[in-house]
Image (cartoon, rainbow, N blue to C red; front, side, top):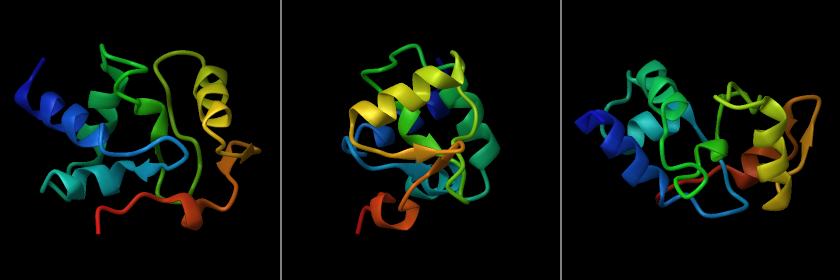
Length: 101
């Protein structure tokens, strides 16, 4: 695991169940605002899922985004946490978007 991946996973543990964060939001959270693609790559390689909840990382427009496993696994994990998904988009996206502040 790279130091960057470790940093991403550690930051992601702050996002509670029932909340989501965008790839860009996670990149900003670790002080690397232009690294959203690298964050996506780190999530794809997450060896600690679901303990490190990469299923909570979504696109900035509320779309589900990718998932290393079947996308339905990501949706199922989100549903289990009370996050509603319709047509591969988070319902009420803005209201459940995680913010550190």
